[in-house]
Image (cartoon, rainbow, N blue to C red; front, side, top):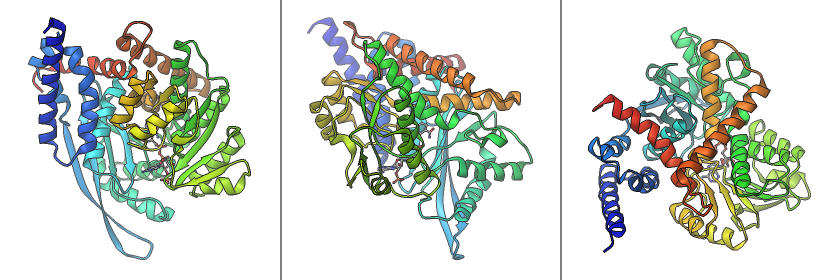
Length: 457
Ligand code: NDP
């Protein structure tokens, strides 16, 4: 066996043993194990000739959250029934700054999903270049079909426990699926009431009470800026590119809007009931209508097909059977399967920008890589959201508010720099960039080196 082959075999056996341990220590947590595998499979080859990371057990420590808090959230519905949900905050890694990451309200939320999201967040936050550690939280609460008052009572009860674990220098939550401006307002109001302090403890706040301009747009816009950087790096542009988008929430609608601004044609959007398709590409007016439908009226996506006669609705389906040059999955985890990937590849898709967290299953990622599709991983593509949250924290600390143009420029520069870091660590010769490897390593190095400095903590 050649030396190169022997080294590869040794690295593979380290990875296998490591993953066996992660699997044993986290039974019943498949999403978390999947996320650790995705990172570890690119980090092990990188640290093969850097024994200090092995000796100091850096990857073992990184796969263990610093703290997981789980708590009861009792609340009363409009009929006077007492309801009970479970809430969590996973404080994953504070090596490079206070814990930072969103709160998700969705019936599917469990500890595995929040651990995967907190783990991913650690690398993502590192990639932004800002001093933020990784965290995530949420509850298995379904806001769908609940009245504003029910959502308010739930948020207040959630924060009545959460407030003691968070703080502007400790842990700064934000929004995520099911948690938008309305919920952040309710939570911030309750935090302020309990603590009698007006501080930047949550991000994504309303502009009237410390929110940052560009935060609402940041994740979707940032994802499109990243995709544009990927295209430019390969000598192409967004102009006239057809783009398949899933989801119709915060990330999806702003991704569609920015894609239109930059000359691309978003053809699809979706929600959990199916997808809508517009062969000519949505107009900005249609995207604004969908924003209003989902954010204000809290309706279902098929209503867009009832309203506009060039839009069709496909019940129970995902958009991945449509032909498109690029895809921006922006709904939820594991929404692109290996089979979906095969169909996209056959239909000529050549760029994938993951705007949701872990939307592609491992089989899909493998298929994209094998077919030489340019694959932008979530922790890089959607980092603009937490990036502008970091800028909201800076504005809150200094008690100032920056202008929109300035923030847009900072976001664009941040996405350009994240793309450049991924290229730096992910170049594999012959012009090929492994963005997944690049993002993982670039995010890893800073956190790992900070952990080395701290000794055994
Ligand atoms: P929203 O709640 O605003 O929107 C979520 C969208 O995804 C909705 O259209 C929802 O449809 C759809 N969706 C949710 N679950 C499923 C499912 N199981 N199957 C199909 N569709 C589903 O969330 P965001 O736009 O904020 O978040 C979307 C993704 O982006 C998530 O992965 C999130 O973690 C990630 N992200 C968000 C950031 C942000 O700043 N908001 C930052 C970084 C990442 P329905 O209305 O039917 O539920």
